[in-house]
Image (cartoon, rainbow, N blue to C red; front, side, top):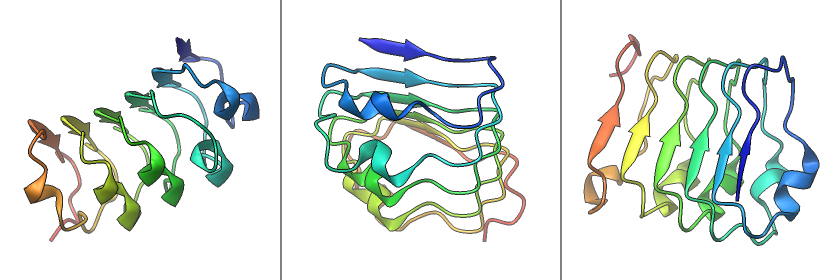
Length: 130
Protein backbone atom coordinates (compact mmCIF):
# COMPACT_ATOMS: atom_id res chain seq x y z
CA UNK A 1 0.00 0.00 0.00
CA UNK A 2 1.23 3.49 -0.76
CA UNK A 3 -0.06 6.99 -0.23
CA UNK A 4 0.73 9.61 -2.87
CA UNK A 5 -0.17 13.13 -1.76
CA UNK A 6 2.02 15.38 -3.87
CA UNK A 7 1.17 18.83 -5.25
CA UNK A 8 -1.77 19.50 -2.91
CA UNK A 9 -0.71 22.53 -0.84
CA UNK A 10 -0.97 20.38 2.30
CA UNK A 11 0.40 21.84 5.53
CA UNK A 12 0.46 18.52 7.41
CA UNK A 13 0.02 14.83 6.77
CA UNK A 14 -3.24 13.12 7.72
CA UNK A 15 -3.13 11.58 11.20
CA UNK A 16 -4.75 8.42 9.88
CA UNK A 17 -1.51 7.56 8.07
CA UNK A 18 -0.11 6.01 11.25
CA UNK A 19 -3.03 3.58 11.41
CA UNK A 20 -2.23 1.95 8.06
CA UNK A 21 -0.29 -1.16 9.04
CA UNK A 22 0.34 -2.31 5.45
CA UNK A 23 1.79 1.02 4.33
CA UNK A 24 5.00 0.59 2.32
CA UNK A 25 5.45 4.04 0.77
CA UNK A 26 4.52 7.51 1.96
CA UNK A 27 4.97 10.29 -0.58
CA UNK A 28 4.01 13.95 -0.04
CA UNK A 29 6.35 15.99 -2.27
CA UNK A 30 5.68 19.54 -3.39
CA UNK A 31 3.41 20.67 -0.58
CA UNK A 32 3.73 23.21 2.24
CA UNK A 33 4.41 20.76 5.06
CA UNK A 34 6.43 22.38 7.85
CA UNK A 35 6.45 19.50 10.32
CA UNK A 36 5.72 15.80 10.46
CA UNK A 37 3.95 15.15 13.77
CA UNK A 38 5.99 13.02 16.18
CA UNK A 39 2.97 10.75 16.52
CA UNK A 40 3.17 9.88 12.82
CA UNK A 41 5.74 7.13 13.42
CA UNK A 42 5.36 6.62 17.16
CA UNK A 43 3.71 3.69 18.85
CA UNK A 44 2.09 2.38 15.69
CA UNK A 45 2.76 -0.63 13.54
CA UNK A 46 4.45 0.83 10.46
CA UNK A 47 6.96 -2.01 10.22
CA UNK A 48 6.48 -2.34 6.47
CA UNK A 49 7.17 1.30 5.58
CA UNK A 50 10.12 1.30 3.16
CA UNK A 51 10.02 4.73 1.52
CA UNK A 52 9.47 8.31 2.70
CA UNK A 53 9.37 11.10 0.11
CA UNK A 54 8.82 14.63 1.38
CA UNK A 55 10.90 16.67 -1.06
CA UNK A 56 10.08 20.30 -1.83
CA UNK A 57 8.26 21.14 1.39
CA UNK A 58 9.14 23.44 4.28
CA UNK A 59 10.28 20.88 6.84
CA UNK A 60 12.58 22.27 9.50
CA UNK A 61 12.99 19.01 11.41
CA UNK A 62 12.07 15.34 11.35
CA UNK A 63 10.47 13.59 14.32
CA UNK A 64 12.73 11.37 16.40
CA UNK A 65 10.14 8.62 15.91
CA UNK A 66 11.54 8.17 12.38
CA UNK A 67 14.02 5.81 14.05
CA UNK A 68 11.12 3.41 14.69
CA UNK A 69 10.78 2.64 10.97
CA UNK A 70 12.79 -0.57 10.92
CA UNK A 71 12.28 -1.33 7.21
CA UNK A 72 12.94 2.18 5.88
CA UNK A 73 15.25 1.89 2.88
CA UNK A 74 14.62 5.09 0.91
CA UNK A 75 14.53 8.56 2.47
CA UNK A 76 14.01 11.54 0.16
CA UNK A 77 13.88 14.93 1.91
CA UNK A 78 15.40 17.16 -0.75
CA UNK A 79 14.67 20.92 -0.92
CA UNK A 80 13.44 21.53 2.60
CA UNK A 81 14.76 23.62 5.48
CA UNK A 82 16.26 20.83 7.58
CA UNK A 83 19.12 22.00 9.80
CA UNK A 84 19.76 18.67 11.47
CA UNK A 85 18.52 15.12 11.60
CA UNK A 86 17.36 13.38 14.75
CA UNK A 87 19.96 11.09 16.29
CA UNK A 88 17.42 8.27 16.06
CA UNK A 89 17.87 8.13 12.27
CA UNK A 90 20.92 5.91 12.85
CA UNK A 91 18.48 3.18 13.93
CA UNK A 92 17.28 2.93 10.32
CA UNK A 93 19.92 0.32 9.42
CA UNK A 94 18.19 -0.67 6.16
CA UNK A 95 18.64 2.74 4.56
CA UNK A 96 20.03 2.23 1.07
CA UNK A 97 19.40 5.62 -0.51
CA UNK A 98 19.16 8.99 1.24
CA UNK A 99 18.68 12.32 -0.52
CA UNK A 100 19.01 15.33 1.77
CA UNK A 101 20.15 17.74 -0.92
CA UNK A 102 19.38 21.44 -0.75
CA UNK A 103 18.57 21.78 2.92
CA UNK A 104 20.35 23.75 5.63
CA UNK A 105 22.13 20.82 7.26
CA UNK A 106 25.14 21.59 9.41
CA UNK A 107 25.92 18.07 10.61
CA UNK A 108 25.19 14.54 9.49
CA UNK A 109 24.58 11.97 12.25
CA UNK A 110 27.55 9.80 13.08
CA UNK A 111 27.07 6.12 12.51
CA UNK A 112 25.99 6.18 8.86
CA UNK A 113 29.42 4.99 7.82
CA UNK A 114 28.60 1.62 9.36
CA UNK A 115 25.38 1.16 7.36
CA UNK A 116 26.07 -1.85 5.20
CA UNK A 117 23.12 -1.28 2.87
CA UNK A 118 23.72 2.45 2.27
CA UNK A 119 24.54 2.87 -1.42
CA UNK A 120 23.79 6.54 -1.99
CA UNK A 121 23.92 9.56 0.34
CA UNK A 122 23.23 12.85 -1.44
CA UNK A 123 24.07 16.04 0.45
CA UNK A 124 24.47 18.48 -2.45
CA UNK A 125 23.55 22.10 -1.72
CA UNK A 126 23.98 21.97 2.06
CA UNK A 127 26.55 24.73 2.16
CA UNK A 128 26.94 24.75 5.95
CA UNK A 129 27.98 21.12 6.44
CA UNK A 130 31.31 20.83 8.17
